[in-house]
Length: 126
Image (cartoon, rainbow, N blue to C red; front, side, top):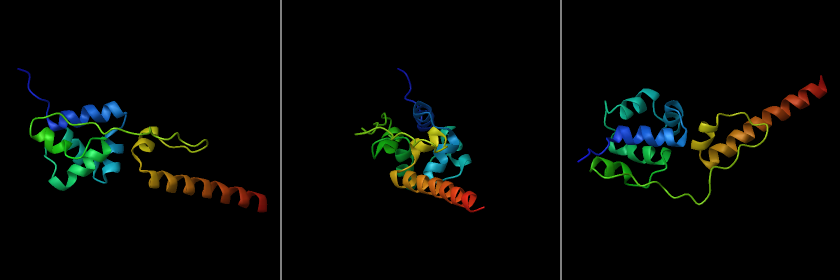
């Protein structure tokens, strides 16, 4: 009988499947990169309050981290829609774009386009 993968192995496998770096996953979870790395290496077990962060970043159904700890497989969240395309002219790592929330994407695009607009206005006035 084959042993069930550990939480760290599940996390690493899913993150790679999503094409997300450890750094991007940690940023999305709002934790230190070293913390994420330690979880993936099974050096540390996440505290219960971090389960939701992990499930959100990895697009797992709520309760998946506990399911893995209990020896079951995590459930991938069904998505109604895929990740929206990156707007033309907006430079960002696709892995970072994929883990951003809708509000974060909107804010990022507003900042980028606002800076671009101010630069154009400044160059016209100079």
